[in-house]
Length: 158
Image (cartoon, rainbow, N blue to C red):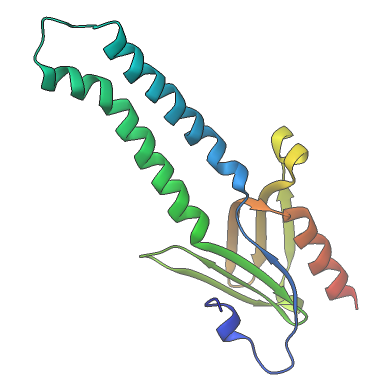
């Protein structure tokens, strides 16, 4: 049970649950593959053969370590974002150490906007912006962002 599920009130029904898209990992997986290929080629062709082994290992391994750290950052970002639309409100949680919480009744949502790139249209994700009297909340790389907009608008009209 997630943090948001624990904060549901009696009679509240979850209509839609969204997380970040898994396509957000594509670029860092690509970086890892390129960095691995670089490291393998670096040692196969014995580049910088006159240097110490430690220097050669640092030069070959640094891009791979950076790519792995970027991948870990994506994993944390993926697991730390959740948006729930219920029949009464929108709940959102973002962050690990610094936590940003969204709790807006549906009738207080002034505007909900979705921005989608070409890849976002192809793979079904986008940036969701929710405007409310309490502020503006932006969720990037959110799977089913368009479906959230539709659900909120349909629920508000009922």
